[in-house]
Image (cartoon, rainbow over all chains, first blue to last red; front, side):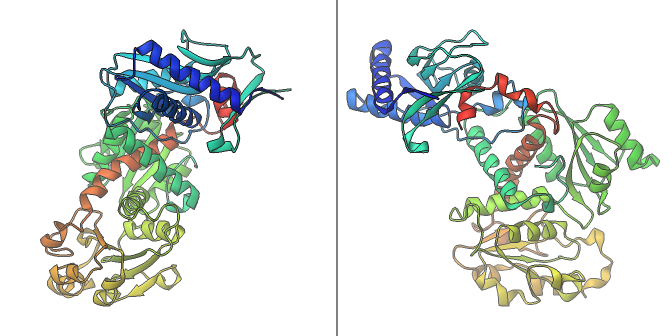
Length: 175
Length: 329
């Protein structure tokens, strides 16, 4: 078990991502953040509050893509998590999806499908705290907190204060 | 959750809450533009209805279609059943057609159980009303509607007082509701003429009253049942008018309800008999909410039964394709 990001690292990474979102979109007037529950939703909230500090507030929502997953039949039914689309909607917006770990890319594919059902954003971008590689689909992140090369037998655990009482990212080897 | 939904007794309190929570999340999703979800694409749901039904069949059909399942409606009238085909042969036909779930309504109590236990089919069986036995999805949608109207009750209904008034004897809705509401901790009072109270009622975890006016001022939820004239000989009470005067929800009784109380009815309503038109259309009546919530709750049930791997299926390989987020959860 190794800690790869501590609380301060996470804070700095999210703040940098906030700056990058502003830079990439030339401001925030058209930006909507959508966090993927559970932890992506908290990360979206945090990036949202950095954006408010730096420039202005943006709509923040959550998007659960469980019902669009392609691996539903491989496991028992998963509980559904909240989907709360901001009242401003996503039509014509620049949507930034936020998740904690980018791995196979299947969650993001499902999220893109879910977005397609709701509306047609002008663009969809992806922000993740950790990119651990091993993609199974042609998907990449626009904003990455940290690239962490891993082996497929390891797992990356993200702990967030809102849920787990502390902030850190650790790699756990599966023996 | 088990493979079938035959009775509320198949579920523990936590599983009930899971279904209600799933329905709530589905409400959030379908609140927006999303009308159709791909979740059950390629699955087949058969509505096997041996008894007349409007809202239950339409509700199940709509729920299955919103999840992209294929729906086959099978009504006994006009089918080979009216030519004398047995339940077994009908079931085996459905099996051969590849049904993943069978929603069955039948006038015989225990028909759903029979279908599930028989080994005739491998599909999940959902009881949509069997005789005077149970109607579990109705109880689930009623609980959902209660939660919607009384947000202070989340997973524990203790402190909530529900009265169910009317034809308890013939009512599968009452049975399922008693099981579910008491499971969640609510206090339930059954009100009906003595002749329409089932034998052995004293063993149920409920209070009993023969006088609606004595109970009505104390309840948070008044559930009015339909008089099931198709299931009764004429001898249970002297006249409809007398029943209506003793147990019907008229304007006077509506006004004696608590300010916060709601009126529910599983439908179809017989206006002027068990409920006056005024009561049915009043702001306390949540009948239409019940119908709308029925679709959500049935979507939740279908998702829980069909949305995942088949039970005893390929759970060993699941972690490979999953992302680590799930591992850390």
